[in-house]
Amino acid sequence: MALLEIRDVVKRFGDFTAVNHVSLSVEAGEFFTLLGPSGCGKTTLLRMLAGFEQPDSGEIILDGVNVANVPPEKRPVHTVFQNYALFPHMTVAQNIAFPLKMAGVPQSEIAGRVDELLEDVRLQEFAKRYPHELSGGQRQRVAIARALVNRPKLLLLDEPLSALDAKLREQMQIELITLQKEVGITFVYVTHDQGEALALSHRIAVMSRGQVEQLDAPEHIYSYPKSRFVADFIGQCNLLDATVLDVGTDRMTVEIAGVGQCHVLPVAGAAAGQKGCLTLRPEKIKLGATLPADDSDEVHFKGKVHDCLYLGDVTIYIVELDNGMLVETMLPNSAPGRAKFFDDNDLVELAWRYDAGHFILG
View 1 (cartoon, helix red, strand yellow):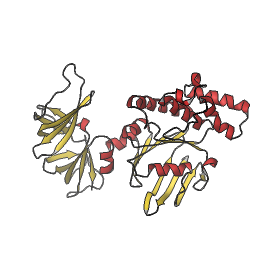
View 2 (cartoon, one colour):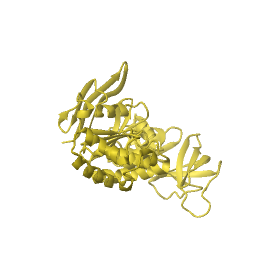
View 3 (cartoon, one colour):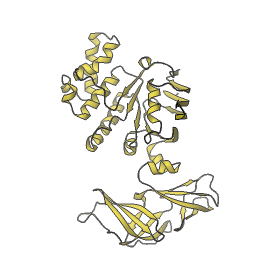
View 4 (cartoon, one colour):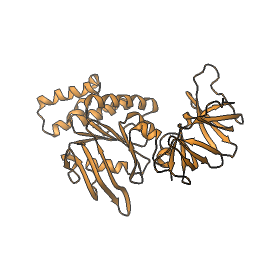
């Protein structure tokens, strides 16, 4: 049985429905992420798990108990907030010990529990420092240690890395993964950062307009999005409008509007005449001045470089096809010497395999 079950939960604020009949489950020991843009309902859902908001209808089952109307202090749940909410007048050790003191844990037991958490988050030598004497990453680890000291069944994290710079955020992602594995506590993590969600999570619930658009493992959400919204929101993606011409057993033929025909992997329910779009990631597309056409599994199109974006490790090229359509492709800057291979208006050729993209009906 799942540790957490959210059953048909609805939350409204006046005429606005923030969470609209959401149902999902989270397994014990899982790193589960609620991902979506601002206003999609992910933070409202997290606040209902914490007890700061009550659902208008539906159930929140935690370890077999409906906690939908249980106050926050009586739930086996702790929350790490965006600003960490550390007490500035308390040392690191005192911050971590505070929940234990409030719970009436004997002083003789508190010191051992605090030392254990300090070791878990690798802050033993910072026990006597105050929050203002710590880096952003260290403060975050203190906040997590304080949330874990009561050994909750569920730890909620509300965009805890959003205030950190890019390099520190990457380091903290690795630390969070390691810490979650070590302590074995279920994490429910809220973020709007797609890369962060892909890096951290066992599973992701992508939310839009108060509903879950797709719930799956990161690699499936990235490679097999179920809707245009998910494809467009998760990473860079070309969305090519197309019509189904023919459906075979191992591939189907589609007509990309204004471009031409190509083969794609078949999808359930597809039939000739149906419209949809081919989702194609930039890294799946080959780019060259000319490309060999000896692979029958590939489709080739000609165009010219419209623009490019140098990102250090890769360069994104925007290629304009003969009909004016713009397609993004990507080349790694792995070769020595010149990193930029093409300039604006250079004539190029694109190619991709029939199984490189994913077709979405509708």
